[in-house]
Image 1 (cartoon, rainbow, N blue to C red):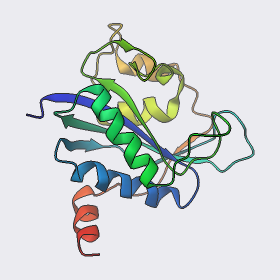
Image 2: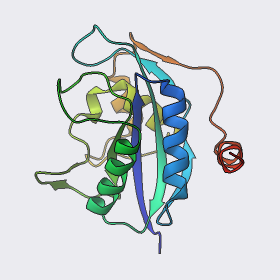
Image 3: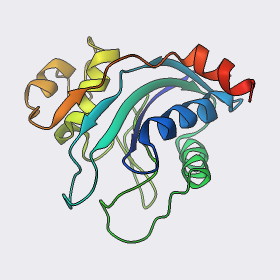
Length: 177
């Protein structure tokens, strides 16, 4: 039964980032224990950390799942590996695909593998703005509205990319390949 709700942040800045994100969405949706409910637009953002790398393309999706948070993390890390993700080198260096669990129900968790809510989400406009886009009435775990969190973000290096992801068309087109 897929009754748990999670929000996943997606990011990529190398090896055709928009294609990486689109394919990751198809990979997620094809998992029997994951169903994508909502998907934000794509956003371009400056990289965190070293600036001598391409801008990122980011999105946030709302899913329902029957997986535990750690099982979901394992699935997302497997998808990252399928996309050529290597967890070596600079912490905020270039990457083909980055999938982060932002929120999982109202769960608070902090262990060596996973911190929920995601530890840096409030300072990341490339997470907060797409999350606000798909859940504008969300109340955050501290009781404040997501709108108040977004109001504290800097928008200097964030821009929405044209078009919207059509997940249905994306899945149908990849099934034809």
